[in-house]
Image 1 (spheres, one colour):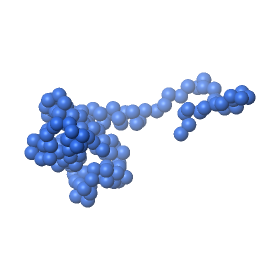
Image 2 (tube, rainbow, N blue to C red; image 1 turned 90 degrees about the vertical axis):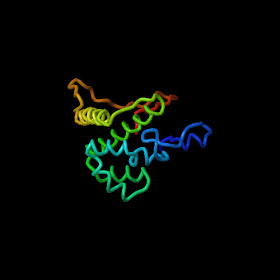
Image 3 (cartoon, rainbow, N blue to C red; image 1 turned 135 degrees about the vertical axis):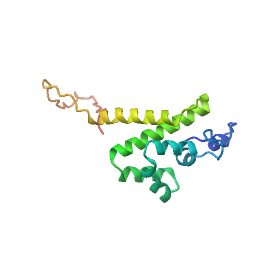
Image 4 (cartoon, one colour; image 1 turned 180 degrees about the horizontal axis):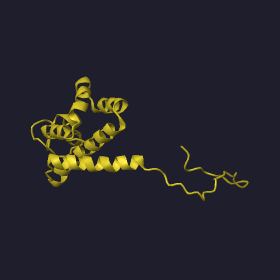
Length: 152
């Protein structure tokens, strides 16, 4: 799911195996998202640690945690978790690639802003144009092909 230092080293990219955030543990996706002391602070400050903890005790891989959380939690909580995980990964990458140090409060602010934008987008009603003419399908001219690009 994520490219971590172990995967990079397997491809002969020189880098450390230690977590760039806490510099204590071997980095893998589980550690970056859940076990690192810095990321645990983010889960706590965003009030999501209590939501995610039962899944962390039940599973040992990140995909199962995400899947079950999405199946059980409400859409706002799932959105907040997704935004936090994205922010944590960007926090990690900013540290690795640019040496940026992000405070937990900045991550919380990013999650809050992202969640507000996301909720607003989910609640927007489409603008209806009363002058719309109903679309109607016409068969293509003889010896021509017609491709429907917006089909699901």
